[in-house]
Image 1: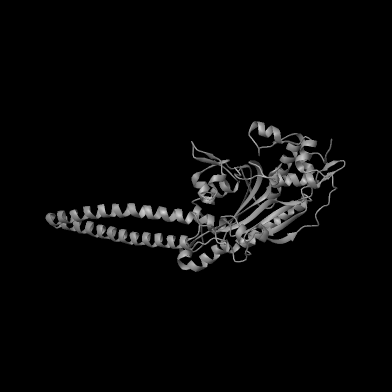
Image 2 (image 1 turned 90 degrees about the vertical axis):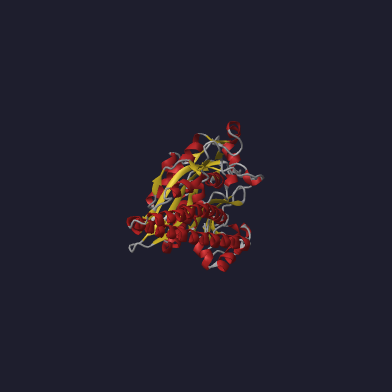
Length: 424
């Protein structure tokens, strides 16, 4: 969430930055300021009462020692009044603080100054294209037809077991899926990321820590009896490993990678663009997460982008990178690059990774701080990216690498699949 001191000191700048997202936050900011000022006034009043109570307590001790018990008993009446007064103020203060936190939770992150203006994905800025997209024959099949032809994925069986959006991978389809996971993890580890195996369910505090709650509450699967949530991405449990942690500068940077299944309700998703593997309720993804000093975070973001480029180059897939405009940014992000692979059979770009810098937005919720050599403390910057999301990578591999003899496997994956072609 946004830092209070930033709102206090740069109110108009924050309003202008959120307006760039298409959000008129003036009333929300005013409400937050009112709550903050009221909370601070109550805290000042409470501090005064506590100071008076401490002073009187010392006076009572002195009076008893001096044999002036009658005067001491008179002051004890005043301490009782102050205790009742402080209790009443503390209750109001707690309610103000809770309301202030809830109001801050509803504000998205402010975009980095370099983020282009715009309202939707149509306004995103293409910053890199790997190569000319492939031209397949007119009879080329989309991946859901290829999956059926070569018996790789059974979408109907998934419907029988769980419902739409839960595919069953079979035979070489399952092997290819597992090969991609292992390949991505090995490449991430070689690039300096520590592998983590986190839980696949998280508590409410974890959801609030990385910003999925309350913003994405309706998109997460909720186990109501235990008040746990199925993870929408490994970002949530992995980043929350550092919730309420004070790091020394020598511990940074922290770089972690994890493979997990991901679960998303995807409520309201319909149409031809959700066919096959394009949009699922359960899918596999390998994630990378970084924690950095603020002055290093944008350099780290560029390194993450460069690393993901190497993964796609190794898979021999045509791809592009777009910088998201302010209106298309995720709730928690200050700057995001999306990677998209080209689906030659569907003739459109498919997003397969988002790489984002959240600056202090998550760390402020997480209370994740850094202490320097002089003992000064500051919030860390957090970053994450998909490296990579499997469904659309697999879809692009099947579609772009289909030939009359079958589907060829990229050389980088052959040691993992133990086959170089999928054929009838």
